[in-house]
Structure formats: C-alpha cells, structure tokens
Image (cartoon, rainbow, N blue to C red; front, side, top):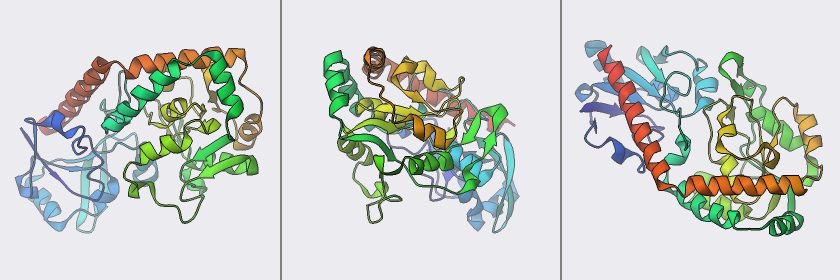
Length: 342
C-alpha cells in the first residue's frame, strides 16, 4: 500500500483522483490527510507545488519523502514548468525549493496508451457517447453522407480557448513537442467571417465549460451535424497526446482539422488520411486558405465511411477499454514504486 498526500487546486486532474479511475487503485494506494503520514506527496501541476503548504515543506525537510509531479497535460509542462523532458526538476515554494520527480508524457510510460488514449479513460462519458454515435455513423451509406455534408449549416467551426500570445509558440523538436495554442488561434482568426468561433473567449458572456453539467455532451449535441469541418487541433503536439477533439469531430459528422507529424499516434486509429485534413507544416494563413476547397468527393466519402467503421469497432469493444484501464493501473503503480525504491 502506497500512502499518498495530495494537495493543490489541480489535485482532481490525476489518474488517482478521477471517479472513473480511482477504483483502479483501491487496495494499492491510500490517500492520507497529513503530509507526515505519506510515503510520497503527489501534485498534478507545478503551480500546486509552488503553492505547497508549509507543513508539507517542513515534513519534506525532516523525512525527505519524494515529491511527485504527475502531470497529464503537456500544455502545463511546456508553458508553466518549461522543462517537459526532465525527469527531476526543482520548483520554488514560499518555504524554499523542492525537488520533484516529474511523471508526464515524455518522462514516463503512464500516458503511452495502447488503443485508447489516456484522456478518454478519465470519464465514462467519452466511451458512452462514442459507442452510440460511431455505431450510428457506421450504418450510414455514402449517399447519406454526401447529403449530410451538402446540408451542413456551417463550413468550419473552431471551439477552443483563444490564446494569441506568442509565448505559446514553444518547441522541443527532438521530442516531437510543439505548442499549438497560438497557431490554432491565428488559424481561426485568418478564416474570417466564413468560420464560426465558439466558446467564452470568442463569445463574451458565454458560460465556462466547467460550469456546465456535462460540457462534453453539450458540445456533441450543439455540433452534431452542424459543420462540414471542425477544428480538432490539440493545445500541444506530442506523439502520445490525443484528447477527445479528433473523435468529437468524427462523431459529429465533421471532417477533423488536425495537426500531426508522421510519428503522431493519431495515425494509428485506422482513419484514412483522406478522411481528415492534416495541417502539419503549414503556417496559419496557408492553412486557412486551404479550408475553403470542396472535399466531399467519392474518394473522401469512401475513406470517411471506413474511418467511421474503424472507430465504431474500437469503441464498441469493451475488452479494449478494460485492457487499457488495466495498462494504466500497472504503469502508474510501476512508476510510483520505482520512485519509492530510489
């Protein structure tokens, strides 16, 4: 049994905290109430380490228990920590510096999925929503899809946080890491009035997605059948970092707009490249110019139907989901035990 003390406002963003995942660690991990009871201290964001309570820092000075930064977001690792490739880092607190073992997409196996990306495991709502929609989509004929794309009310939809600041243009080329927040913002702005830009940062007065009872269901219902193309660009390009965005676009019947180098694992899902638009290597202005071209021809529709069938097979296979959850459990516990043995 590993005794863990968790703290910080991002503590719920951890494989050990999500209600859908926490049961995987029952009997192997125990959460304790005070730092002095813990075998290790666990944080989900470097900002939480920097805001560590004095009691934790004092206990670390006395017992030197490991400080673990288990970060699920490459965006956090690149913009806040700024050291995404380092296994061990130092972070300042109000009570002095702490050494932290960093477990992220680049320094651990935790997020190196086999079939189902990590983020889709964090809530059962993802698999439940995809199972029905991809089964529906896979049953549609080529003629039905041709009519669908002809009837879409919007040409292109962008739905992500507007972040134009150049500080987001970070890159660790050897590790396949590129910040995309500013790039995708420039793309959305370059498309002008022919595109819809949705969300609080584009539409002041809209509620934050965190305030919605189920932001993911709200997104799927709003966008289902709405747009010919839907921007599915991640906030950060990392080979193993795949969120719900690409699958949401496919599920809603919209051609995904994505940004992926050859080694990115989005290529492993069996969706033919003709069924989505890969904007990798283009500047935002050139990418925006390419979006208006007609695309729903016979070649696209054949690839589109194949992609829908592949995703229906994936998300209807409960065994794949169970195996991925077990893989996650093993890799998280292996990393924590390795740290405790040092």
